[in-house]
Length: 318
Image (cartoon, rainbow, N blue to C red; front, side, top):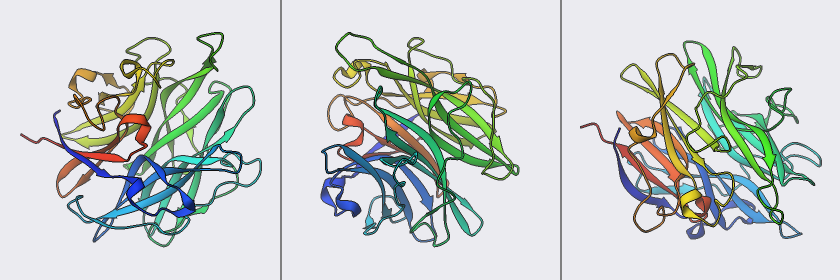
């Protein structure tokens, strides 16, 4: 696998975004349309007490992924009500075309006291081709369970042979690495299936082997099929020190499978890495792969978790 970088293609600070958001365009996710490619992302605004809220917005590109047609000027999906799992934000959102509907699998998060946040996966449905989404219910479709006690999120859903597959993350523990720093989270990638996209059966196991150590954090899987093989990209980092030390920050990992169940990790085959300098020189995170015009593309975020936007790469077919 070899990716050619096409550079950063969207900077949120250069556009007027809904809900007064002025920075971050995290976890870009595509909806392919007849005349454009809609890219959803999570952006942020400060609330009345100075803490972040995460909102969903989108930008429309033409079919060559270089020219911006427009951006959302309205609320795409409302945040949750008081006490709901998505009260304080939605990050990320994954969209799937399903007949005349567009399904959105959201990661709703809410603030906690002993630790910073918790998360669950929700479902929202659009019947206006992705302009707006209405929640399937006030609660999540996948949340904490006996063996997955917290931080359920980062859903990526695909339909293969009539069965919905979801790859997602689940928290395994919160851990204090120093006496003075707040606890850090550890999370891994898992898999679930569904007949209807609402009720999910979990495998109940970590499916991607650790590379760094047992405290490795794995996030935002994305899967595509090519030449009879399923390819997964995701990002991974150290659990502690990742915000200040580039060597501990997110990098993009890779695994492959022949059956969607068993995955072989080999990051040396990923074909993409941080740059020597510039917007993605300190980290690469939140990859999203999609196929368009017989090519495979990857959207991803760079430094500071996508504060300044996202970039694009294309898979080299040679």
